[in-house]
Image (cartoon, rainbow, N blue to C red; front, side):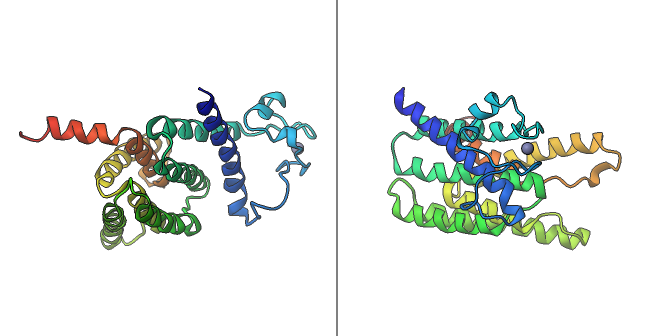
Length: 256
Ligand SMILES: [Zn+2]
C-alpha cells in the first residue's frame, strides 16, 4: 500500500512537470529554469502554491494575487498522470519495463495536450522518444528489440502511406508528420503487435468524436481534429489491456 502511495505521488509530481512543459514549450520558455508565475498577473507562485492538486484546492481554483481563475486542467493533468503511473506499477510491478512506461506515459500526456492546444506534435519529443524506446528495447531483457524496430517501421510506415495517399487524392495535408512519428514511438515501446490495436482504437474514437464535433459546428466536416491524443489513448489502452485483447481475438475470431 505504501509503495502505491509513493508511485501515485511520483505521478502527480511528473504531471505537475507535464503542465509546465505543455504551457512553456510552445511559448519557447525554458522548462527547467525560471519559477512558475500566474499567466494573468505574472505574480510568482510560491512553493506551497505549487503542490500538485492540493494547492488548487487550497487556493479555491483562483490566483492568490489577482483572483483570476486557474484552469481546472492543471489538477486534471496531474491526476491523470498519477493514475497512469499507478496503473503501470499495478500491472508491471518493480521492473525495467515499468521505468520505461513511466517515461512513455509522461511523454504521451505531454504531447497529447500540446497537440490539443496547438495541433502540433513537436519532433523534440517524438524523435527522442523513438530513440530512447529503441535503446530501451535493446537493453531491457523484458522487451524484444526486433519487435520494437518492426513497430517503428510498420507504425510509421502505415501512417506515412496514409498521408501520401490522402495528399495524392485530396491535394492537401490530412495526416501530419507528427502523427507518423508518434505512432513510430508507440511502436518502439509497445512493439509491432500493438500497431493494429492502437490504430483501430484511435480511428474508431477519432472518427466518433470527429463526427460529433462536425455535427455541432456549422461548417461541417472540415473541422480539423488532432489525432495525437487518440493515438496516445490507444497506446494506453494497449498498455493495460493489450494481452487480453489479443488473447480474446485469437480465441474467438480465428477458426481453431
Ligand atoms: Zn494572478
